[in-house]
Image 1 (tube, chains in turn green, red):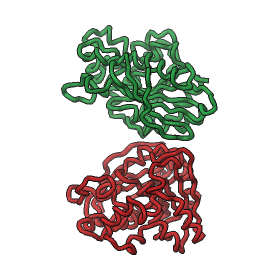
Image 2 (spheres, each protein chain N blue to C red; image 1 turned 90 degrees about the vertical axis):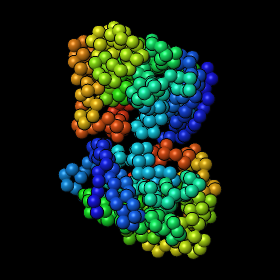
Image 3 (cartoon, rainbow over the protein chains, first blue to last red; image 1 turned 90 degrees about the horizontal axis):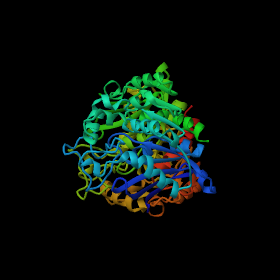
Image 4 (cartoon, rainbow over the protein chains, first blue to last red; image 1 turned 180 degrees about the vertical axis):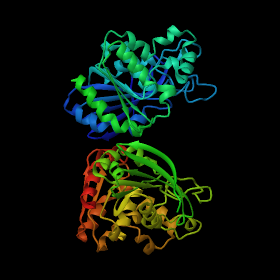
Length: 280
Length: 280
């Protein structure tokens, strides 16, 4: 697999880089960003935090707005931020042009329905193809953590719950906790997966958490003034599912914070230190 | 003067807010952003850092990308980020649509040439109208510092050099140090000010620094891999002018850093702590 370096910026003594590559899984060219901390300069291999972004985002939102590099540089953690859907002119998009389906809204599932199944295989891309690519091209270990925001918080939790052997820890900001019961999730899952509820459940963090056996340290931050809190996100249902199964989830409700990157930036340090505790 | 609140986001225990207002100086409606640190909640008045952004920017770039709120919250400093030019359909723009003249490129001067003189009075707006507005509407003291990036670094240095009684300290990232000798500056000054070199000199930090009498603590960070370093920025000329006049300027060349916000984010903490030392 060939990587093309698109940009490089020195950042907190390390390097922010963007790459493009052909994804066999997604059947299109993809871009991702990686932050490499200064520790790699002397040959040290570092663990990786995968960050999954929310609706409408690309690899750039987190890298430009979260302020994570400062702490990643201190802790010696690489961060990888993939795009949120397949891209390119050949890739089907929502004919209505909505922000919550199609490009920018891959929902981290493997689509089974035409025409989405030709490219929308974000679950396999994030779980398998991308880590293989990262681990064969960058000075990183196989120690992985995963985190994300909103649709990406759903992705991080769901992927960690299904693959506990591949990650050390998981966290999320404002995750879509129970997509099979909220408007964003129902629309996306109907489109990508069809109408069978049993298929949907494999991608639902609440459903997965209730029956998870391999358990990871899990941490969620949620703003109380988030406009999507009650209709779309429902973290209380995730907390209830965790309690039912004795799953080690901590949910922090953050008074007055909203759904924006101003919220993420305010608490990303805590998430990175949480993951660092399990990546060493 | 009436302020309209456009947005509010909680950030590091404080508040990021955008406002619009009618500017009498610029003869148009303007937007600015303010970060209010948590200290104001108990009635404390805080000092203000004014941040001037570079070409093509609005009030949003710094607030979203620099990661300054964390340190401002710790130090108890408000940050005000104005837009970079007058705005609106009535405001003349470069007919060529270039990024370095017209809207988004006000260069912090008072234009004397038609049609620019009708709205492009950014010097007076930043020096007088905006601080008056801020100090009569927010819980802030009259202690001010000023900083900026690129075109905004030019603005910060030039404004501090001309108004040392109004600021406690000044800093800049990658400033256009000697605009009367570089392509960006020559183009802007010719357009806004006409062809008289003496008029240009009032807005040139190197010229002003050579003869400054009121001296402020001044600090500049410059990346060595900045693509604009040798043709547009020329910090070595600013350093030479400071030495000539015994001006207390520190210039740090930062190895490997470029002109982007990844550079600014890496060193903004040092700038805020520098200003905090003089604002108390």
